[in-house]
Amino acid sequence: MILGLITFGTLGFRETEGWSWLDCIFMSVMTLTTVGYGSPEPLHTDGKIFSVVLMTFGIGLMLYLLTLLAETMIRTFTDPTTNQRRKERKIMTLKDHTIVCGYGQVGEAVATALVSAKKEVVVVDHRTEHLEWAQAHGIHTLVGDATDEEVLRRAGVERAASLVSVINNDPSNLYVVLSAKGLNPDLKVIARASDESAARKMRRAGADEVVNPYQLSGNRIAAMMLAPRLSRLLSGNVTSDHFTVREISVPDALVGRTIAELGRQTGALIVAVWRDGQPLRGRPKEVLQAGDTVLVAGAADEVEAVEAQRLG
Image: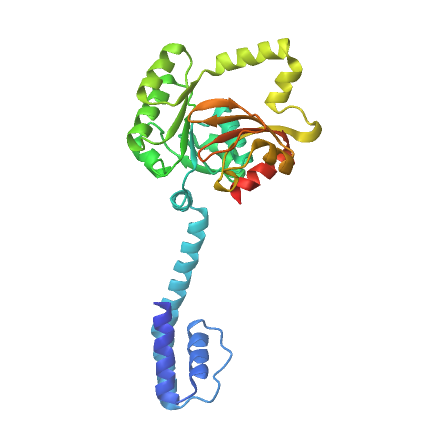
C-alpha cells in the first residue's frame, strides 16, 4: 500500500507537471512524509490541486501504514510467539542432529558435551526457564512436552540421527522412546532409567542403550578410589597435553590404509576398531575397511587431525 501511494503520487505529478521521473518520485515521497523541502519547480494550478488531494487523503494513510510497519517489525523481534516460530523454522533445516529430551542437570551435561564436539543439538523441555542457558549458548531449543509426538516432529525427529531422553521420570522416558521409534525406526535412542525394571521396558520399547545415572556415578566413585589416575584420564579431567578420546567413523579416504599409517600421519593412538558390531584390537597392520569405527586417543590436536580426515 505504501508503494501504491508513492506510485499514485508519482504518476499524478508526472501527468500534471511533466517533471522528470526522479523529480516526481521526490515530490511524492516528500509530500506523503510531510518533510516539506519544497517542490523542485513552481507548481501549476493542476499540480496544486493534485497536491491538495494527495495531502488530504494520502498523508494520514501513509503515517498509519508506517506506524503499522514499525509495530510489526518491533513485534517480530520481541513477541515470544514470533520468536518461537523463527526458532522452529531454523530447526526445520536441521538434519542428522541430536534431540535431547529433558534439560535438567543430566540433559545440560549431555547437550554441552555434544555442542563441544560440534554436533547440532535440539533441546526439548516444557519448562521455559530451564532453556534460558541453552538459548544463551546458541543451542536450538523447543518448549513442549517431549512425550507428545507432535512436539517430537517439530524437533525434527524424522530427520534426526539420534535422540537422548533424560527426563527425571521413567514413564515419560518410556513414552518418548516409544514415540520416537514409531516416528523414526532408524533413530538411535539412548534413555535414562532409575532401575533395571524400567531399563528392560525401555529396551523392549526400542531403546538402543539405557543408562542408570545412579549406577554410573557409583561406578565412577569406585573407580576414583581404585584407579584415580585412570579415572581422571578417561573422564577428561587431565589438562596436561589436553588428552582426549573420541570415536570416529572411518571415511572413504582412509579405507585400505593401516592403523600404523594413520598413527604416523596424525600422531594419535588407535586403541580399537569396531567392525560389524565387534571390537578389534588396534593392531598396527590392521587395514581399515568401509563401515569401520575407530576409537582414537591422544592430544586434542592429534585427535582433531584424524577427525579432519573424516571431514575432508
